[in-house]
Image 1 (cartoon, rainbow, N blue to C red):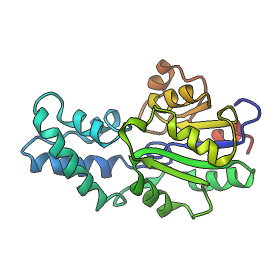
Image 2 (image 1 turned 45 degrees about the vertical axis):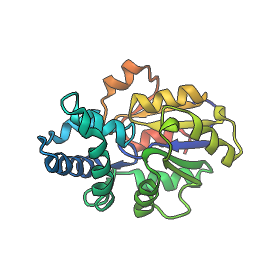
Image 3 (image 1 turned 60 degrees about the vertical axis):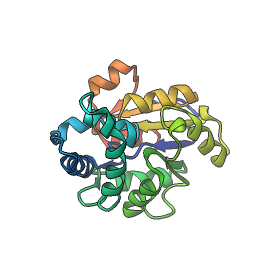
Image 4 (image 1 turned 30 degrees about the vertical axis):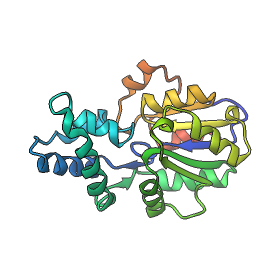
Length: 219
């Protein structure tokens, strides 16, 4: 079970609340082709996403064409902005799970390394405006996860200490964010990374289904 006294959950977005991998992969691959570079297999993006667009683009190009990274960032932001919801959908059971957590009295938030305006757009596409108390996406490079800056800001908005907050995510980056903030962490295994990835990173509590998440949170 989670730590007693958990009063709020901060959810990662991509790979935790929604499966957005195909939209991200196709948008980036279209931009790579425009630059005369080979596209990457969609499954490669499981290990490239999660740390913001600049890092994603650097990983997509690798060490072969470093001078093209800046241009790929520009193209990728513009291309993804026009198609973030073509295939992206909530993972099965997450829409009712969020409702049940809300009904149980938990405060809820979203914290993503996806650009802020797109984070809001994706969340609002599947959950109503009352589902989450706070929605925060990537703004400044220096404050992207695993920096705990926005965890602290969300805690301030919720008027709760980090010790009463649980981060829910699918990557070691989410776990490290929780560690730095002094918050609890629940790892989900339905996302972009594997159970082994999370276990090796030190995650102590993993769930395989939204129903397990609800039980751990007492909802």
